[in-house]
Length: 322
Image (cartoon, rainbow, N blue to C red; front, side, top):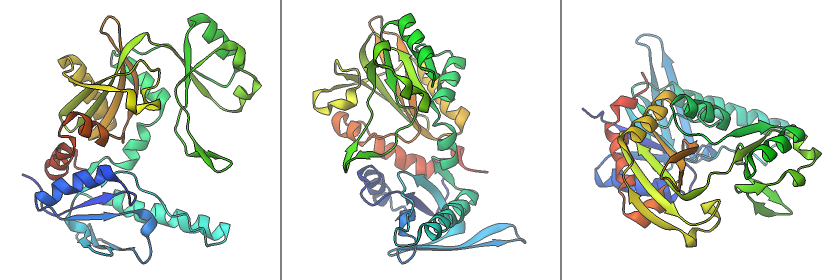
């Protein structure tokens, strides 16, 4: 039986993906309070009381349009929150205030019991390390391309010469700008000759290139599996969305079970997997994004992904935090 109460949607202001889920929740008359941690102050206030007898958290979370009793939160949809920077404060004061928000606002949310998360941010964080993902994929019997993580340029050159066609990809996406222009890092081919001593500055991920004919994006929401084959001819399909072809496919039952078990290992209610499909039709592990984008896939394919998220937030007892 679904728990009654409000759903908290924690995200930045212009999150179209969250809008889609909220629309479904509204249609089902489920109370929703949306907020961004950066709204703290006039736009967001909290009062969390920790009582000893009985042991529980009570109080209120208030936005400009909603007031939610903390002991009546049904679920928390943790999407793309932005934390405040306090740029009008001196640097030391700003760092202090930032820490208080993260460990105060974040801390009481993490402490709520009897509600379910999609996904709990601490579990998202634990699942977001690519080397750990690769090791776990190996343990689940998934095909993982040979991979090297190193800051030693000689080791990197040796790996490239051993495997021939090798790609580089970032271990973690971060916002980056140069001369005021936003830049990003794509998956790119790399040769031994172009490496220099700057490799020593930080670990790099090098991986043997899969001879693929298509990519697969698999979104799992609770127990539901949505698989979309993306055909592009590109090494990194994100570089040209206009040139992509989308086909809804059914995964082999064994692969679906494995990917669900992968999420269960991290205690995640949802996740987006990227796989490569080779010429023999075999699937090769690339990565998991615990909080990946999916709204454009719903638009392109008609798959009812937003409705599945709404179902999970309403009925997701299996993902309750005890």
